[in-house]
Image (cartoon, rainbow, N blue to C red; front, side, top):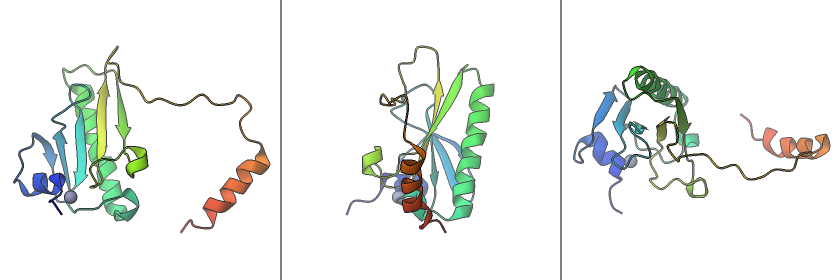
Length: 141
Ligand SMILES: [Zn+2]
């Protein structure tokens, strides 16, 4: 099995343009940015999915994303907003199976957007929502 490209970045065997690094996290510029300043945050420890990541590292990842977001807002890139995106699993669009958070600065007319499908105006009734909630609640730890 070929080595994970994010693990290569962690080890330094693959070049990256790092913005930030601490004991557990690295933030680097995406080499194929969606917008100027598009950054990826990864834990140094190889972990495939968010649910497998230790709680303290989940916290560290979001704190790192916040740091990057702050810097982007102060920078001369003049972004007007930021999308924080984490694709968890192939169905969600994850294509590198080492958990990562995208920090995507947004600019007027940048052409990027999160597409939500059309939804019915009335939504689901309380009973339907409750049946869904029951299926999920029993697995909450
Ligand atoms: Zn990896």
